[in-house]
Image 1 (spheres, rainbow, N blue to C red):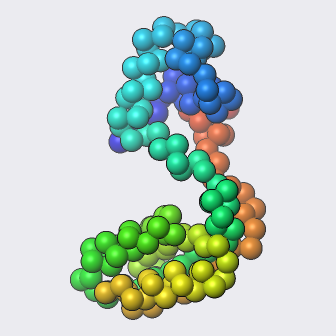
Image 2 (cartoon, one colour):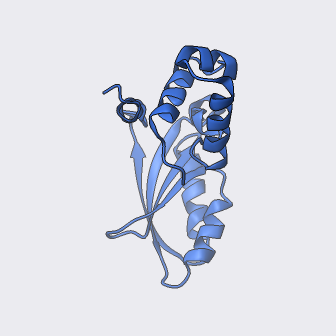
Length: 157
């Protein structure tokens, strides 16, 4: 993965301030050549540093008002098969391999508790999934934030 340097961080911060800024506007704002900004944005996108726009969408805007975190225990040797099955469930929006009592931590969205029950039941039908433990998110107290880290990388902190 490409490492973000000071100019990359400044470009991303400028896009946070104005997501519709053109390459030319970014170049003028940052005091760098238009071709430099264009090349940097291309490298960030190609290097998978910039995630897709869909990652910025709040699931509630799609009717998924409930968020939950599900710990899954996977049968030894069945990890790939289980992951393939989990990836087929659209309401699973994030999967992390973890240490501790569970093998995976899955972030799930659902329309309501009945819908969450449907999703977790479907998880248990996947070959290799042994157990689940679900925690419903009552309130997102602090959403994902990277601005301060970007400011530090940009040399602003």
